[in-house]
Image (cartoon, rainbow, N blue to C red; front, side, top):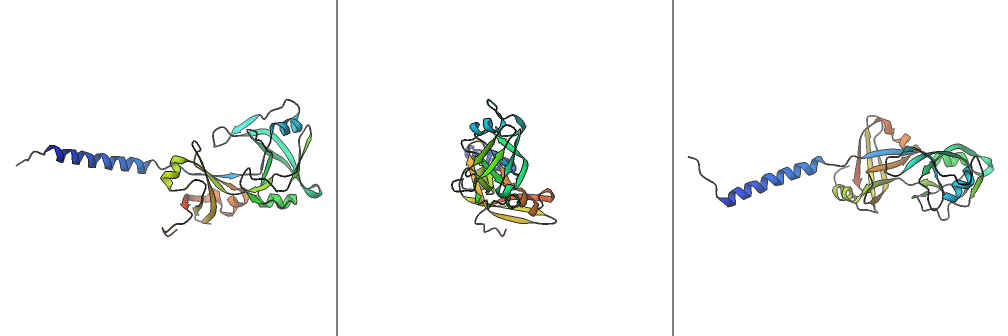
Length: 227
């Protein structure tokens, strides 16, 4: 014998179905994590672009970067350290900034003879300087040479979904058959629009053999999940 369902029972069943579908949809839309190796590069002011490449010159985009609005420029400079140690053809990234800055890996700074501190981008007060040489002129930076601290670009929506507080540190776990690594102290640099992307320098990328990675995962700084 088939019994008819009352209205409240039907509404309860419908709510349960909708809730299950909603949960399944949310679980499926996990943001894709990209881990990029950021090679040595230079950020320039508009004034320094003109001094290095000529009056009226601006940066010429060559290749877009993963983050919207940022690009590798066609222009390169020579970075010169103490005792005339140098790195030729260091790529300039755009757009221009309010202060010029040189970002190196640890081995780059050793090669130049510069004791570059680990800093987050833009935090260059009290850092060493260097000389930049372009096809038109020379710029002597009094400060601005850093080893860029590892960080993750992320938007606020992904922060909430992944449980990563903006402005705090998290961890990056890289799994591979050869060399699994967990990087601590990855700064969560959050805004409204960033795509989910971790930046490591070339030394860090080589240390974990990133090209051989089978899985990458962001974890909270304090994790009780056994990782």
